[in-house]
Length: 453
Length: 185
Image 1 (cartoon, each protein chain N blue to C red):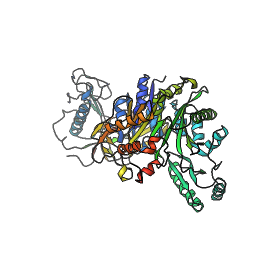
Image 2: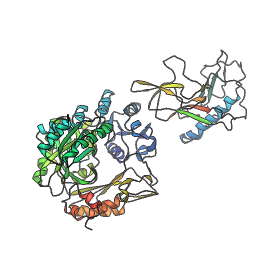
Image 3: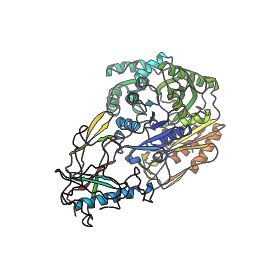
Image 4: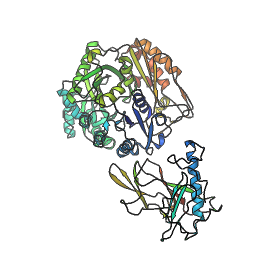
């Protein structure tokens, strides 16, 4: 195992990684921007290095600063968390060149799976079902029209380099294709520095189901079951659960096996996620592969008993998988609520500020991953996530009841502070959600106010 | 001259100090205060000033050959400076003038290794007593084998060199203390 790991991230995930390291006896180095100088991980970690000013470009996305910090503190490995540099093949490569272990897949694998068009080809070849659409990045608007003629409307135009719910547009009308391509292309150029597009059939009512995979560097790959992330607003996940409800066991097994096979085919090492859309007829299609730990990883941890961050560290240090597929079992149901500092009554606009009173839920089978504390000033320039409340119970109904109880206990107040906790309570009491039959349209239906009480 | 200069960092804890490491920041402020007092007492700007606060060492050199060491208490001066008092700079620090002088800092723009000079053995870009202009190069920062010039983001007279040549620095760490231009009271 490593002596010392640098955590190239912030917020709750930095604390999550630091805790895993501490349990493994690994010393930690936090890096922080000026905005985060009072953050929890800075005092929790064994060492902390100030790497730049607030804007992420000059701190958490600043590769030379992070590599220098690792060298100064003699860290052996770098954990990138999620977001920021976690899926940047250049960062993974630079780490390697500087004698640092990047905790994640190899730069080549990240690059190949990060190119959504290349990933579609590779995964189709590995036998995973993909939505009908383009096989190569689009070369012209005419080609886009040809594909629409072939696969039918609606379609979704996506950036090859896209991710995180950004760089995409749904097209319902054939006259909108050209404008959509132009819009997404220019957005993708500014967001990702890559204007290439691809196109696939859009499923208006679908469930978002994903499979967690874990692979070591000896060619072993296993899957840890499914998560449902259909409770989304504008492609941003708000609530996740494991296992995916109402998913036929046989189908879940098939998704899991094909994901593990896909990971093997790609030469994947570490923990990763295969994201699928499941249509009303129970067909599943691969959307994309995420080469990082996911925000929603705790729900898988609670049902399988496997600490995914510790697995990442062990695998990166050259360890073998600690369990075989046959030993993986999923027990009960876990839910996760992402509590953001946003105002649901003002179209989820961020509401940062000083959190004066911060009360976390407790009690049996409730876990909270957070970097907050009473008096914490939530910066305005980063992700609005303040806490993840996770609850486990033997059945889904019990897990929902437990989560409602936990959210009732949660309190974050301060001048101008609003959170999504109240909105999440609405989701938990919604009939469609409670039945487990909801799809990705649930949140917009709730927000349109037409929700049954 | 300044026998009460306390420890500036934990590297050399003076034996006669009862405060723990927690007093570090206060001590740094004290060092700064005494340094400013000392500089104010000099009748002309020195070329370099070296202060080592644990058990106190102060070396001062002037641009011409003559140098003065204001060696005060217990420790040696490493013999770096001569003891011939050519300028009177070694006179006891007067109580005068330090009040109202605003101390500012030139800070590191990034994480890296800080260098005082263009190359080993070369003269430092700046030293104590030098008046810097905004935009003037004050050092070099190495990050991932890339050498970046460090420039002053404000003008003033350098009063202390706070980072050694070749020392690793974080973003925002003070490299030099300076007395803001025109702030002399």
